[in-house]
Length: 96
Image (cartoon, rainbow, N blue to C red):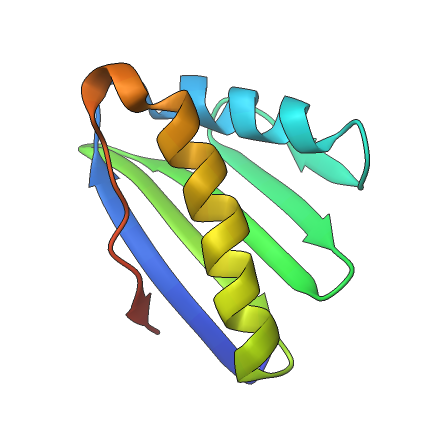
């Protein structure tokens, strides 16, 4: 695990949908792997792991330093919120 990480959880009935949309979006430029239960996005400065849970979606971002971690929170968060605009879902990142 990287020395810096943060996590966000959002309640949704369709976590697999968001895993798929985020991973497919980033797959055009960077390595990703995903199925309906989990996704992994490998950025140059760290990684994001998306996990479907009973009540929603858990997002974990990890990086080697706090500046890159903040950037990853912003990139992953802004893309998620853009895809989730109809449900008005937002992320609240917490240190993990």
